[in-house]
Structure formats: C-alpha cells, structure tokens
Image 1 (cartoon, rainbow, N blue to C red):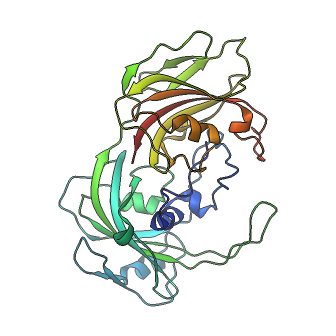
Image 2: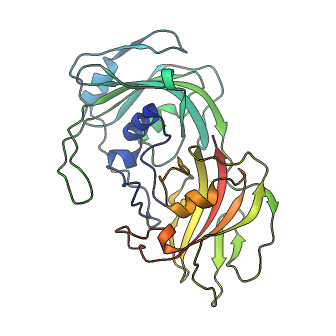
Image 3: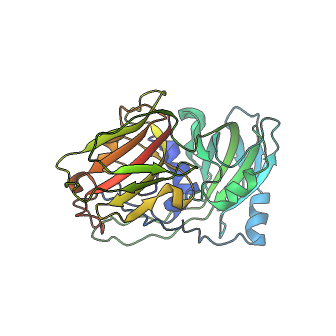
Length: 330
C-alpha cells in the first residue's frame, strides 16, 4: 500500500501534505496507479539546512494572537535550499510525544510574493503523526520536546518544472513555501486493533499476532484464487464505522499468494494514514474498510483487479492478502 501524497480531501491539507511529507516532496504516486513500497525504509534523502537557510527563517516574523491566522512577514522572493524550522513561541499545554496525532492550524505562503496558498483557519485543523518517518525531519525535530500551544515556523524549498511523461503531465516550477503552524492538541493513536476477537471460517489464511500485534500468516496450500473481495473481521472494534472521505490511520501487512510479504507498516516503522473510500488507495481497501468499526482488524483477500490490476506495478497480476488494523478515522 503506497504512502499518501495528501492527508485529507481539503485543499489546505493538500498543501500541508505536499510541503511536509517526504512522499509529496518526491513527487508521490498517481492515486489511480498506487504501488507498494516493497517494505523498504522511507527515503529521507532531503538536504540539510545551511546557515543561510537558518538565517533566512530567522528573519521571518509572525504576529497575532493564537487561534487566528497570523500575519507573516518576510522579504520576497524568499528561498531556502533545504527544509528548515524554528520555534517561535513555546506552548504551555501537554508535552508532545512520538506516536501522537498532533492537530494544528497553519497558514502557508508563497515565497515568491507572500500570497496565501493554504490555510486551515478557514477550512478546519489538520494533523500529522509525530515521529512518522514520512514527515520531513526538520518539522519533527522542532516539535519534539515542545508542548501543545507552541507556534513554529517552517520553510521548504521550491522546485523546478518537470517534463511530461507517458503517465504524468508536466508541472510548473513552484516557489518556496513558508508556513506558520500553531499546535492545537495531541492525542495518542493506538498501535494495534483493540476489540473482540472473531474465529474466522476454516480454509482462510491463519493469522498469528506477535506480542506487539504485528501479524504473520500461514496460507493453506489449497487456497483458491479469489473471484471477489473477501473481507473477514479478525477483531471487531467498538469505534464508529469508517466513512468514505475520512482520514484514517492503519497498521497493515500485505502478502502475495505464495506467502511473500511485499509491504508492511510494521516494517516501515509507522502506521499509514490516508483518505479512505475515495480512490487514494487500491479498490480492495476502499471497498473492504469503509463501513467497518474503528478498532477492528480485517483479513482482506483481494483479486488482482481490485488490487494493482491495470497498473504498471510489479504486482499488477497478483491476488493479494492483507491484514489491516483500523486505528482511527475522522
């Protein structure tokens, strides 16, 4: 299951994702043709901020009370060579910790002319999971050890235009982005499904959970290729039912029918957050997860046409098996 390039369906959230997520900075995947990560480590290969980058952000000023969009002032055009962040104002609330979902307001401005390119003060707060390796390190580092109520500045470099390919259109060059971020709250996200265990029917893959909840499977030798999506709850949670269009967070592992694990959030090092039910992930996920209670664990057996069929993925012709823990949805 690919990493997301957007966090929510809101326009402001797309700005947040494109600016703060490593996947966004790397260009991301086409939602119509998602590709597995191959259980590889996230590629945090962004350059390190220089003294000049740090000085440029130090020169940015932020004014105005918390709770309303601030006035952000900087010399234009603004440019940095690498992501950079700094604390503007310390918070006095709960301490921030890795694994928490951190809710925030922000305003994002074009480095070229200072125009607003995104703001949650009009659309509603957005969030990230602190410590998620997909989030740019500069932001994670400035938030670690801080508290709810903190205000920080973050800047990301612009990029050059890219040429069109057979699968993507050409994109225009984009300017550096300056963001003023206000931390509103933090809550702990469960690390695994929590609910009532269900005994699955005979003949399905047998799922065994490690002490931390990471699944492994034993696939029966006579398991037939699926002709339709199989959705088998293994744990039934007591949360609200997942709705299409919600931002949801999952732990998951995926295997081919020969038992090869090709992707896993457990191996990748953090849960996976995406918008569910809107085509941001493979159809088998959208169809299998929407309508299930938060806190549940699902065994999904997905025919190729509801997985990566029709894409250029190396798994395009593969029927797949997933074990998915639904951690939260909102």
